[in-house]
Structure formats: structure tokens, C-alpha cells
Image 1 (cartoon, protein in one colour):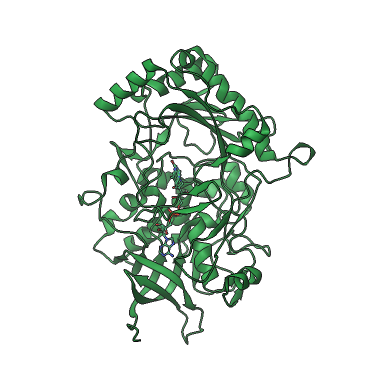
Image 2 (tube, rainbow, N blue to C red):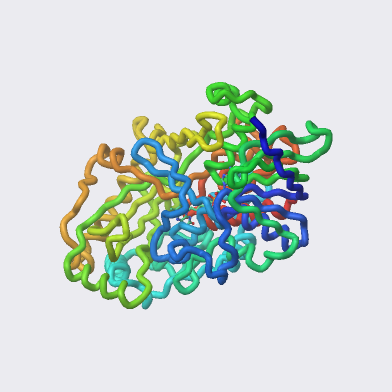
Length: 496
Ligand SMILES: Cc1cc2nc3c(=O)[nH]c(=O)nc-3n(C[C@H](O)[C@H](O)[C@H](O)COP(=O)(O)OP(=O)(O)OC[C@H]3O[C@@H](n4cnc5c(N)ncnc54)[C@H](O)[C@@H]3O)c2cc1C
């Protein structure tokens, strides 16, 4: 049997993964004329006006599902996009930054609230973030605003604010017209054709050598492009494969916890026990109601005549078990208008604990890059609550009270039907807990034995390899994670 020799591609800086953070890193370096190669497992459809982007990925009306890695465990799907722009190309396009206290709590140089604030200003501008105006609210969300006002909840004009307090308001979004403004449009369109090279359909398998092992200071990487082997040679390698993708590449390379690597049949080349640990997300449950006939008619009419997003309003609440007195709960109503949405037939008020303490893991099952990972988020497994119960569950229980209050307000109750799901018990919360699509933290920055990289993303003991994505967050911010991931890209690019 003959093997095709691997094509060799070389660049000063190679970025693996064209997601939210990877696009920011590659785009920023390309703006400086640096020699950058950006590798992405999924397809590149070109700039926003290429005419090649599938309508589903452009439309910000609801989540897109066509370009997914297909990860699953138990009853959960763990959606992750495999396309230029990464998850910013199929997400809800809700723009949030968390609270400045989140970054201060990381306790790491270069990441305090004051230091990330100017980066966020840049990200907000690049990602074309704006707040929906009140007059843009669809029939359901207009009534949510009325109900929240009647309840006396403080109404915010800008939810995308590091100093925001508890409040309810129209969402801030990175949507232009009805187009989801992904990180590729924001960071790559204007540098395409310059010093940036993009190779799509490249599935990166593992690192072959690093830091002098091959007789130089560079990093060599094994990958496949549309079935053909390629070898990548990088001066500096930036891992931006996301909270699932990045630890998997490290583990396939023999970098990780020896026990995990042994179980997967991979030889240990660098012992780093924190790889794939500290995985967490915002756990989420919902209160729901059937849609009444009048509301359904208004929704169908609104959808037929214009842009009707499923999500438009959001609230931040302080639970009775808040760890620091700041808001720790997101509450956001969701309403679909037609049968293409998984929510058809009901409205939800989603409730998320945005200061989770539960932790899980993501690890390789084998050395085969096409094998799906082993993902265990450990939702609601923390024991930091009263009497050793789960703090995260207690936050959700409190949040459901606000959600029910909102749905019971006359402005909503008169156009809604019966409750669909009984959420009155802790067991119901455990049985239905879902996630907010925000996995982070699986290669945390820091200095302790379980940290994977330093505060500039440099992987401990693996010279030439830098992490730049949501995996390096030690603790998730109390907000949606797309803008924070882009901010990480901006921040790491400044160190390269
Ligand atoms: C359905 C959904 C809805 C969401 N809604 C919102 C929202 O409304 N607001 C918000 O702020 N956040 C939202 N998020 C979360 C947010 O989009 C993510 O936190 C953010 O995009 C993560 O950025 P990242 O750069 O860390 O990773 P990603 O964007 O996931 O990028 C990783 C990239 O690396 C590529 N890759 C991985 N492994 C390899 C490999 N081996 N070889 C080559 N390429 C590889 C992937 O294909 C991908 O393009 C949502 C996420 C999902 C999935």
C-alpha cells in the first residue's frame, strides 16, 4: 500500500480554528502585515457579500443547525459550529460582556475589568453591536417589556455593559439588518487577499513536534485536508479550536493527564493534568406556557411581514444565594413563530445560573481525530449550597420564581395558555437542566498545578504553542460568551 506524501505548508503564525477568537487573532495580525495562516475544519464561504453564505447561517432570526460537529452525551446535544466564524456563525447573536467583577476575580495580569474594558469597546464596535429599540419588539417581546415594567423591574437601555446591575431590557445584539454579524465578517473580510492565508476543510489531528524537538524552534502539526494529509510548520502555533476542540488537539498530541492519555492509547509527551478539566457552562432551565390563538396569529403576521427574532428581551437578577451580591441569573423569554423552530407550540422563559460552581471534563476517547470526545459537564454537581446541596440549582430555583411571575403578569397571561412543564421540584430542575451553549474553561490560564497556560495563553512546558479561545477562561463571565471569546482573541493577538 502506498501513502501519499503530506503536502507541507509553512507560516510564521498558524491559527487553528477560525472561530470567534481565532478570527480576531488572525485578523489583527494580518492587519499588521504578519505572515498568518488560518486553518478551519469547516468551509470558508468568503466575505459577507460573496453570495456563497447559506441563508441559514446569515439569518439571525434563530439558531442555525446545519454546520454542527454533532457532539452528544446523555440527553444533551453540545452544539459547536464547524465553519468560518465558528460558533459566531450559528449562534443567537446576543451580545454581552459579563460584569467587570468577573475579570477582576480571575486575578491574572492583563485581564482585570479595567484592562479588558478597552478591548471590549473595540470588540463591540467591530461586531457592530447595538440594542434593539423598543419599537422593534415583536408581539411577544413587546408584552414582556410591558409585563416587566408593570412588575417594577428596572429597565436597562444597554445590557452590554461591564457595570450593569439587575435589570430587564431589549437585548443587545451583533445583527446588521437581519444578518448575524459573525467574527469572520468583523475581522477577516477587510484583510482577505493580504498577508493572511486561509485554508478551509483542514481537520487538525495533532502536534508532531514543538520547541526545538525537530531541530528548530517551530511547531509541526499533522492535519488532513479533504482526506489528504498535510503537514503545517509554524513559528508560533495558536490553538483556537474552542472549549471542546482545543483540549482534544492537545490530548491527541500527548499533552495532558497521563491517566486520560493512557486510557485513550496516547503516549505522554508533556504532563499537563489540567487539560480538559474545569469545563463549565451556564446551566439553564425554563418556565413555559402554550401560545394562545391571538398571540399565534400576531406572531404569524409579524413573521410574514418582517424580521421576527425568537429572542429580543433579557433580564439580570440577583438570587437569594448570590455569591457576591451581584446579579447571578439571566432570564430571557424565547418565542418562535413557525414550525421550523424547536420551540414551536410554546413560549419559554429561560433561566440560567451565570455564576456556576459545578465543573466537568472533556477528553478524547481515542487518538482518532474523527472520534467524538467524552463530554461530562457535571451540571448541578457542586455541593456549595445550603446543607451540601447544589448552589447552581438554588440559583435556578430562585430564577424560576421570577420567570413564572413574568408569565403570570396580565399583559402576558391573557395571550398565553396553560403551563406545559411542571418545574416545581428540584427533581424537575435536575431532569430538565440544559445549557446556555457557553462551554468554557477546559484549558484554564493560571499558575497552579491544574492550569494549562499562562496569562498570555502560552501552554506550560510546550514552547511555541499559545491558546486563544474560550477554553482559557478560569471562570465563565456572567453573560453570553461570544464577545468575551472575541475579546480573548484581541488580547492574545497583542502578545504575539
Ligand atoms: C447554538 C449556540 C448559540 C449561542 N448563542 C450565543 C449568543 O447568542 N451570544 C453569545 O455571546 N454567545 C453565544 N454562544 C456561545 C459563543 O458563540 C461561543 O462561546 C464562542 O463562539 C466561542 O468562541 P471560540 O473562539 O472559543 O470557539 P468557536 O467559535 O467554537 O471556534 C472554534 C473553531 O475551531 C474549529 N476547530 C475545532 N477543532 C478543530 C480542528 N481539530 N481542526 C480545525 N479546526 C478546528 C471549529 O470548527 C470552529 O470554527 C452560542 C453558542 C452556540 C453553539
